[in-house]
Length: 239
Image 1 (cartoon, rainbow, N blue to C red):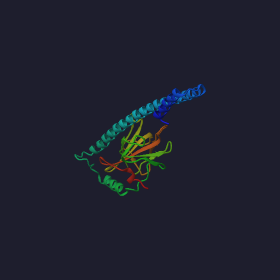
Image 2: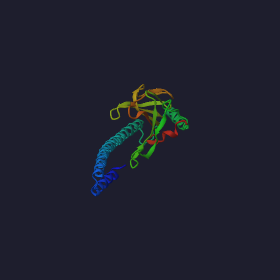
Image 3: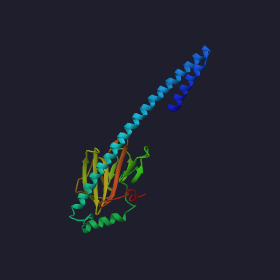
Image 4: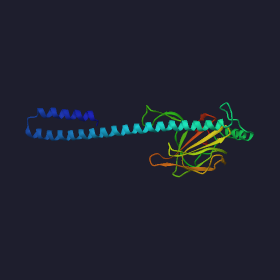
């Protein structure tokens, strides 16, 4: 029963009472009216509570979206800086012969790469989609979210060199970026890391552990780039 229909019931009962002449019937009708008014007040309280929760949720969602945007800008700068270190005047990294082999091997393994965690499922897809609750709100995902078990180990999906391994205050967790020639894989939301910048890592080597949130659970955000181009990570992982 919504607030409007309950209000109409109250008004209808008040009109009914005015037409009654029998004292007993009127007394019973007044009791019914009081009950309806009490129910109406309860619905009003519930409505205000829902409105507050809705307002708080929207505020939280807005903060989350802003956080995503700040993180995206930070990651773009970090990847761009790695590309510029080659001294290239273009966006394409100048690869050494060895790096070129790694890059070629990475490309050949599209759809065959191991998952960055040993167990889990994709809880957020790549691309732009409508929010699960607020359908009019669009969410832009640069990678995929993989929900896994608490304290799950995070692994490099391919051999490469650690470009970035750093703590980010904005998300209260670590980020690791691994370069595979002209490709980059990004691992976001780690509670600890076991590699340092410049380390050479192997395929499936443990690089850290996923951070845990009481509300969201343990979610690893995983991204794949070719130079500065964002790729759909789901297409690169083994089915």
